Structures are given as C-alpha cells and as structure tokens.
Image 1: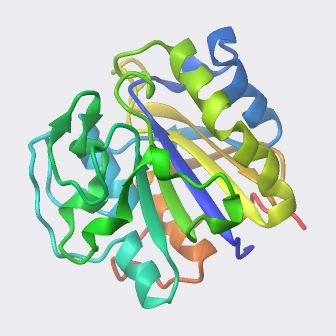
Image 2: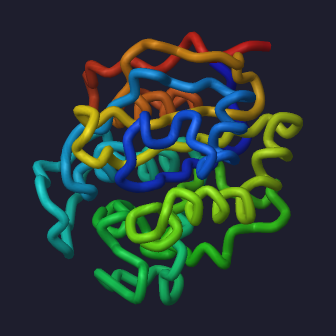
Length: 250
C-alpha cells in the first residue's frame, strides 16, 4: 500500500449510493469518481448518524445506537493511534465556534458528526473550525476529517448544495493531491433507509487505480484502511476488517 503524506476524509449525509451515482445534481462527486476508485458495495454500519462516525473514527460504534450528546470514551482511535506513530490528525468542522469547542450544537454545527470530541485520549485542539483548513495543502496534518455543516452535508440542504460546497472548498485540494502523494476520501454516514444502508464511497488522488470496485466496504474497513495507509497496527487489536489493498497503482 502507498504511504500518503496527507489524507483528507470528507463525510456527507443521509443519501444512498443510488441517490448520488449519475445524478446531475452531484456532478462534481461523479467527476471525482471517474478519476478515482469507486466502491460499489460500500455500506454504513448503523442508523442514525453518530454510530457511523464513531465506527469510521475508532473502528467501533462504542456501543452507541443514537445521536445523544455528549459522549465520552477512552478507547483507541485514529487520532491517538496516529499520535503514537508521531503523525498528526485534525478534524475540520464547518460552523464549529472555536478551536476545541465541545458544544453539542451551534447553528448548523452538530458535535455528533465530530467523533474526536468524545475521546479523552484526543486533545481538544485537534477539533478546528473549517475556516482553519489550510490554503497551503502541504501544511495539512497527516490525516484530516472535513465535516460540512448540516446545510452543506446534504442533511438539511439538497444534493446540489452539498455538491457545490465540495467543489468550491475541496476541488483545489483534489487537483493538488495526485501530484503531491496525497488522497481524498469521500463517503457518507448512512443512506436514507432506501438501500439497506448502501452508500457512495470513493478514494481519489496519488497511487489510486481508477475503476469500480465491487468488494464489500464498510466504515470499519475504511477505518482500517486509513490506519494501514499510515502503517498503523490494527486498532482495535484483532479487528476482522482488513484494509483495501487492491485499489492502488504505481
């Protein structure tokens, strides 16, 4: 597997694979898929939102089955695993009032979509407003999550609004990544209860072998892939979900 310098993970909301694939309102997302690896059997692990974000960030739902806030955990997670390997993490949330804020809701910001805020093993300052997302992409941490607010993640706003937000705010990074040993991962938290939680997931950027991949992928396996890309041991230990190993080229 490649060892990227930077990985940016973007999580959108509440739409199925069928909602996005070929939808003209999601023109930018579909264009990304055409130049990346599209996983045609990607699934969320639960309803509602929060367990999916926890699974993607920590390899476990932490026993959570709702969107209740606040939550507190001390278990291993992506940020703490990266820190132990002298790598870095940040979560950029649109609408977060200030760095490290642990508020449950503020305008269109929702803490349930920012799982790092729930872990005592993660410094509060890794939670940053999206306005802090670097314009010089070489200044990005090793792994970054980008969480649009409830209007722009397609939860409250439309597919077209979310697609436009992605193009306006992340197209420059997506264009920069292939030549700078970096990746963009785009996924959804869950579907709209219409497709057995089948969701749209793609990886684009350096060393990605373009195409469609029919193997089963879920948030647990995507978490494991993020860790494997950075050379991290499986967390939690003995996780049955192996990383994606067949979507990489030279």
